[in-house]
Length: 390
Image (tube, rainbow, N blue to C red; front, side, top):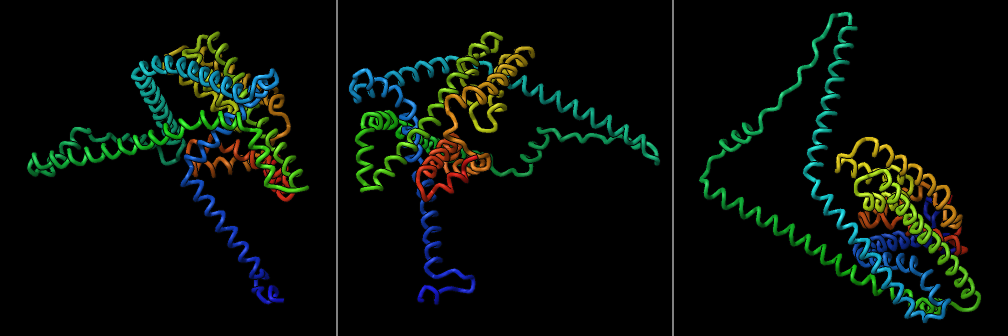
């Protein structure tokens, strides 16, 4: 009766309104915590995704009677060595690419100028055609405005103010130094934070792999009776779906990168290793994979001034590999266990990109897939899983 007496004109009871208010407050606190401690969450998520990728190899070591701790250490060392070799190969091509940067800037500037000239010529031609068709007689084409020389504008600006030269020079030097020093300190702080958090990733990955059985048993001890059985099934389903998504996407990207590198080298594309690696990992991006995968070969052709036939063959390689990956490799490696609808993916990219910037864009889809996996295996959250799915 007391709850009924508390109902307002909208038909919502006081207890229900307070529950909604607490939910909104808790959501706001959670979002603020995700933003404030995003470096910690990003580091933990990167370590978790890396551990999921390496887990099948640790399981293989366990099946051949290697202790899990030793197998985890061996797998982590091999993975670190492979990353070092890949980084070394990419660094050598990036150095060669940086040497062509001035020529690339000149080519891009010339290309933009030629395009603008053609657009201006087309506008003038269309203006003449339409002016002749008017009844009132031809209208002369618009005369392009000529911008004032930059040197004259700078001279006028400099001559407008003529205080003592020494005082002006001292003030400007002081302001430039403070701005530059502030930027350097901010950059160093960001780099230091990134390096500090990245140094934790190998240790987190090793402990997640070597202590996975202990973590699994300890988690189930939070539940009793029938709830423990439900939690065990849910945890098994979540682990299987998350591993299928992460490992499947990673295997698809690696396979496409290797084939792209071989085909790019066959068609004589400049920097085939770097372009193939970037194109292979960009092709698994949801909904924009194909245009994103076309960017590395286009940049490679522009940087090295390669012929147009190389660009056409490289674009054909990217299109064929993307269609093959999404229709053959992806269903085979990922399967039908994880499906997200385009609306959920788009909102997740917007939300996590706003919270965590570039890292959020990279982690948005794995996070959403993990949330969907949790919702699909928890009875009270299954409607949300169906909403996120396709």
